[in-house]
Length: 136
Image (cartoon, rainbow, N blue to C red; front, side, top):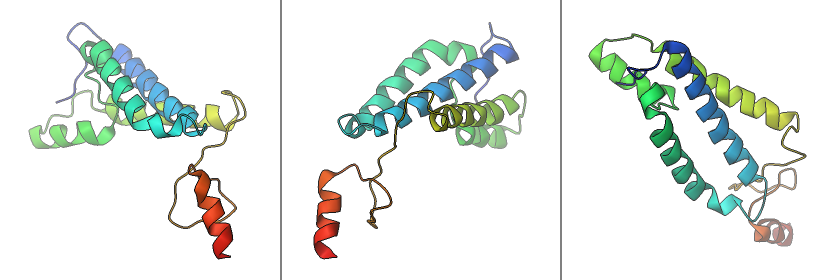
């Protein structure tokens, strides 16, 4: 079960979860905004979460995801301090998204991979629009 560390208080656990989620979502958005780095997102996520677990597991238990904390809490019927793991990741994600939308990281555009191609949305693969344009 995800719980604050024995040497940490609820506020420290909350702040740790908020910062870790903010960093994760911000890194994903930043890397997806550049053609050269978008393909490295899975590796970056692996490395970043590994570092976050190593650094913060003793502070907050490193949940980063409400579902990861909900399951064990449900099975054990123990909801002590579980609000941290529902509120902090959502807030961290929202803050990262707002920072991105307000261009605090610079003017960026998330590129997407998709099944349905239109010229309204950019694609991470350079050939996507070329193929789409040839068909139409």
